[in-house]
Length: 115
Length: 110
Image (cartoon, rainbow over the protein chains, first blue to last red):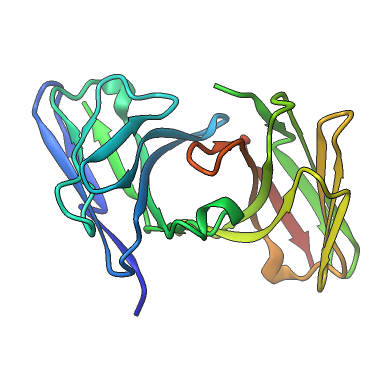
């Protein structure tokens, strides 16, 4: 089954404790991206990757890092989480041909709370 | 980033038409999209329209684009309770960076 898998789905952590949210897709997609969803703000793009070893900043990259060492994985790293990073995070992937027509495949989301 | 705005809430009666509106600021937007988010799930693409089009119809869905006013709308005909969800419009210039609206929560009253 084609899917984008995120882990963990839920996490409560404390300020400053480094964490990683993993994202994996099984569709051999070149394009992957991370979003955060906040009430009244919709989804905002954090980082995206066009292919292995190619990453670019989105609209709100501050406080986040990503890496793309393998095609299937695109982890989101919070080196020193702060309470303003409490949010619902989504990973998405797409093929090169599919992304222009908006065919993004989304994971189920990771709800992160930073105390 | 670019601004994409939507009203937050819409209620309609089952069987009526729903119209969800969206305005965007980037006149260079090439691709415009509508996504649906059901509770506890990620977004799913409903439909898209290229900026050189005025209208697109796909079964019960009709997308209208007024490029001059930077206004996009999604009409759902014969709205059903299963259409209750949050609807996001989004735009992209290149298909790399996507800018989403705030989302409109549609409630369908039986």
